[in-house]
Length: 119
Image (cartoon, rainbow, N blue to C red; front, side):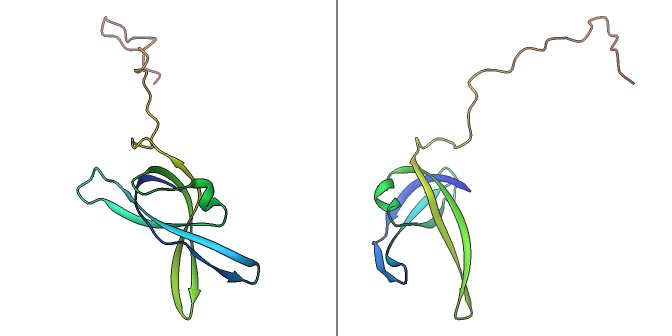
């Protein structure tokens, strides 16, 4: 999945020791649909070395590729949104824009009013 928006908050770095060694996790809040009357916000996390690789800063426009996962803990379910790629964005629509107009019709309809229909 992909979303583009503005980083509005960088949450504190979390770290600890697990059975596989030390881990690091940082969470961020991104605001998207900022042109609508009711902008939306989403929290996502980055793990390990990708924290320094992406170097995300507050007020930065970004495009985020992420996965959504769910896990159970003590009878409650939690969603987890983990980014696997973050790149700087220009703040425009993530949809590609085509600068070229539509090409002209190659075979215009006959001008004498007769249309050759295939049925």
